Image (cartoon, rainbow, N blue to C red; front, top):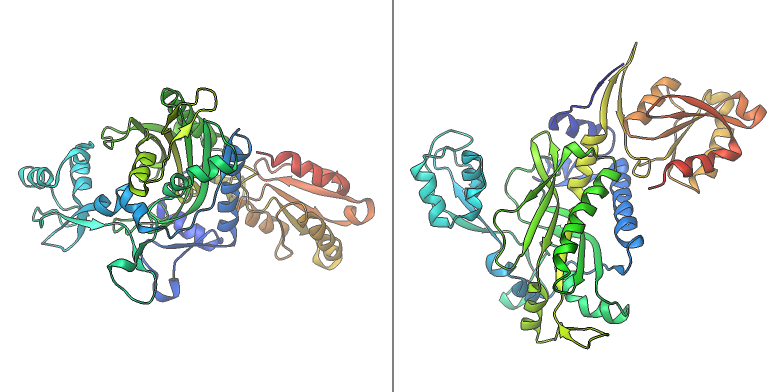
Length: 458
């Protein structure tokens, strides 16, 4: 039995479309670049990743609270955060082939380093010209000057479109946690350290290549902000780096496919920053970012709103603005990493099967009910389907041979297939097949639900 876990990005895109994981957005109108719709299987997988995050970061952690802030916020939120004035990409056009690129990325790719991250616009132009950095498409060096490309989507509130009615689609979720710091602290009587988490959509006017769902204009983040005393921040920062890595490993990602990447260039307010990267077919890419943001964010909102963001220590009565340790998880990128990590093409003696080895907690369906012979076993199979569906996500399939039905469930990652046959009708037993080992055991129908529940825990 040979195993091959390698899969190209092109094949993953095709597989996801074929089996209902992810579709091209607006496909019947030739699509909209960098937009993707999650299908019936992908939507369940994505929601299960959310549930795993909620369990690990909200349910199991003390003093952790989830909120759901609006996408549209007062425009002054984005002035205070700095996004209005500085949230832009340095873009440069090739005069020869008319393609557009990020200048810093051109330099980083050319130098195989991150030096572009530290350069001003003038320094980037000089480097590109002095080193004759080529256009990735046509190979020539003939670029325009750098222009700053705004990454926030603007829209208008009300019926009159003027500067006073401008609002923004949020480019990140974090500000929703910051502006609700006082509300959560007061209503939950929270004491430091405590955390605010949120899962939600964010939007960025990206023009760079997407690599499927890795970089999109609409995406979801699983945000986590921990508010703490100055002095406790470094320890918490290191803790959440490791906590995030363990989270991914518990979801089934191998440690050798993950790495930490410390930022060489820090924002002026940041004390430390580190990404968790996953080894995609195109190379390592960020799926998590953990940052020590110091007291910058709450201080800025205090300055702009004129509302005190100070926390009063109940033991010392000292008043101060807390430090923030942020740990952000890209939901779409995490799902993409899980898809690549789980996929395997397995060559059997007389067959080849594609299988998604999802952690059972993440599997879109936990169980598939398969009547061996539709004519004789359909009624009992449908009865079991209704019963099992009340306990966990269950699917039903009665078409084609039992072998082909097993293969369909393998490729969408269903961990258990239950075959209904004559023994089910006569002795109230079923055959349950394990996705990963393909081994089968016989169980009483009365024991199946507990059996499955014990194996899908996270």
